[in-house]
Each structure stands twice: as structure tokens, then as C-alpha cells.
Image (cartoon, rainbow, N blue to C red; front, side, top):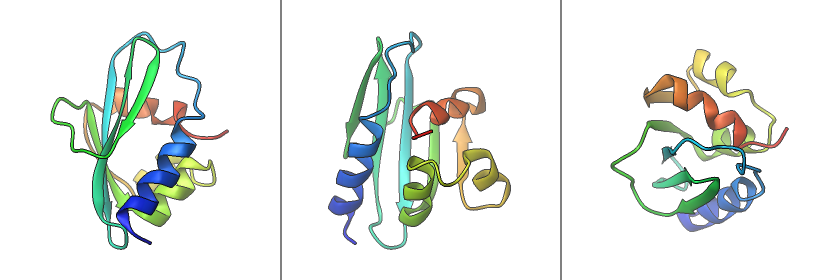
Length: 107
């Protein structure tokens, strides 16, 4: 799977999230490792979600994982906290804001 395929699929999943209630600015960068390697960001600003295929330097948190792990997280098949504690997901930055990743995934 290429980076473009990974990004397109993850973006379509994230864009289904209802972030209209999120009043705080939240910006995450996702670093995909292994197959489909690359970086993209997701940002919530004034209740609107934007997902773009670029690195984002004014981010609150950085998530690093494989594409497979990211798909499982986004589809709700893998709990982000479990993925973090088992080493499948690395998180850097503001952990309080990083917990808001759960708002981006299917329930």
C-alpha cells in the first residue's frame, strides 16, 4: 500500500468524525512507519476538521505507528490507550490533548 492510499483511506475515516462540539484547537501529526510510510496531520479548529498530507509543526501531539495499527485505531478495532501501552503506538507531546484522538475514531 502506498502513502497516498494510506492517507486517502485514513482521511475518509477521520472526516466522518463529528468534531462540531470541540471548541479547543487540537492538532495532531501522524507519522506512518513501514509500508505506506509518510506523515500527515489532522487539525480541529472552531469545530471543523481538516486532514492534510503534510507535516504540521504547531502540533499538540505526534502519533507514530504502522499503517495497519492506524487503520485499526481509526476503525475502532484497537483502543488507542491499549495500543500505546503495548508499544504499537508512540505518542509525543501534550498527552491530555492526545487523548482526544478517541474523538476521531469510529465507535
